[in-house]
Image (cartoon, rainbow, N blue to C red):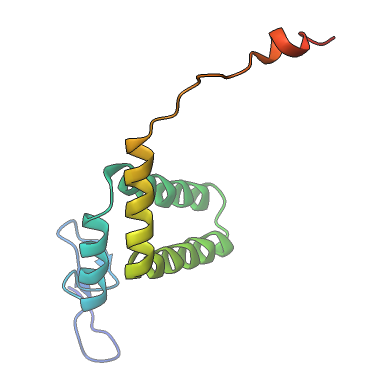
Length: 118
């Protein structure tokens, strides 16, 4: 049987039985998920990869500084993602990057130009 929080509310529990710190309908969580849903897939993948790397690092070496770093990184990232000017700038940069793929016309072969070295 679940206990209660100091406020008298029952703790939130995921379907797996794991206690959850916030309701999925929390307004801040909903706002962030809306923003994350508009990010390019590559960026969402990088978010998951980064969070999981911190989780694994913490499991291997339980250092609360790792968790603090992750929290600060996520808070700062969310602040950027929710900033409209930042969103416009990054979207424009991404459009430019996709419109002008990198080419190697005129590239110099370093070995040919300067030699293989010794």
